Image (tube, rainbow over all chains, first blue to last red; front, side, top):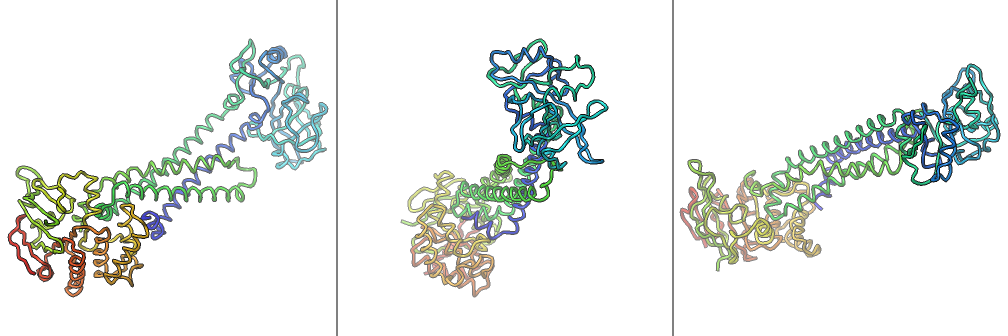
Length: 363
Length: 228
């Protein structure tokens, strides 16, 4: 009762701190969204692959760029007893001109047509021949490419024409929108020189059980998530984003802590009076914590509203890799409430330790 | 038996050469329906005696009884319950919760013990009417006049129907006319409800409105004068 009435009657004071908490929570949501967006741009296409495991070349240090598997490696992996399905995939980056003087880079993924590595089509048809290509929606948004359009992909110093036969929704790889071609075409795009020296694949995608950690002479298997975590820059990027989030939560806790510390100092005489007339310390601490909870919950809701508004307006384009998910917003809101409560514990201790004799001494 | 009994109560602060004896061997009884005015100069120990009777302080020696119960043996929780249920405080300057209305200041005291809400509301409204505060019951405490605030403080002190009222300089911030009205209201409630009351005051004119004046100097009772 006391807590709610005070907030209602001191709207400006509590409104100000709620606004500050809201802005901090908004910042944390933005940073979290940026982290998710960056992760998505780093390799959502890899994470969205249907399989569970990836086989890399032993000497690649789990780098997709450096991983080159031979026909023998691929055959060995495909013949593993625990592997239900196994299919080779290839990766190469390419700069593609989609209009005069306009180009963008794309991640070209080579897949075996009809295999479980081939992505689901949202428009058009699957890869039917060596000159067919599937393009991701992210590319469509940038280049305006449609089914039936021709794309010229670089092969050495020349180009090779591909026909867009389908649109997919697989996202990004290495911060580039993805395109899918027949793995035989990928070999030519990636290694236009000596045909005999071409590797069979960059990776082998597997589904099955208990394959993690298996290794052969030229290959090793890790989970898809481990593969994602080892994408160049992902871990550093995630650590940076996490550090920003924790810093935001720390600042939030400190702001709430200092606010309630100051409020408590201002109210020492009043708290003394209330204790003198019989208010238990636990009642007063509860009232304070209730205020913290209300401020944090309203501040978090404010932040979620702001984030949704930002997503709908400023970030509606593809230029900023940011992604707001319900779980990120919920986690941030809960974190802000917990941080706020922790921050206010000092004030709660102060409240509990106010001596009621102060009621008579401070007159 | 007296409602409040103080038996050889002493209160000292500090030790050795820094020891200050605020209250020395005070024995005092206050009966039902009796207002005792504690009179004396600043630093004479009046407020310390009030704080001892209200269990805000524990005596260095001696015993305090309320309705026969030895208050000096109470632990921290029991002292909180004692202040909540058996003692009503009226502080100098009233000390209302500033963001609450007059009525809410009474309700919040009622809510400490978790009593029946409708009973609390009924009692608050009844007390406000009896103290002629019906018209200002929904006014925020800071907007009340000094006299109104002190009467609200008296009503608040009576909220939980305590045995003992402890009143500290209730007229310090009021002019004589308003002060007299506040003390009259206090006396009227104490007599009507048969409470025991100790009122600390500097003002001899206010003290003379009580039933007995106890003069205190250097922590000791100097004299007692019954007035009625």
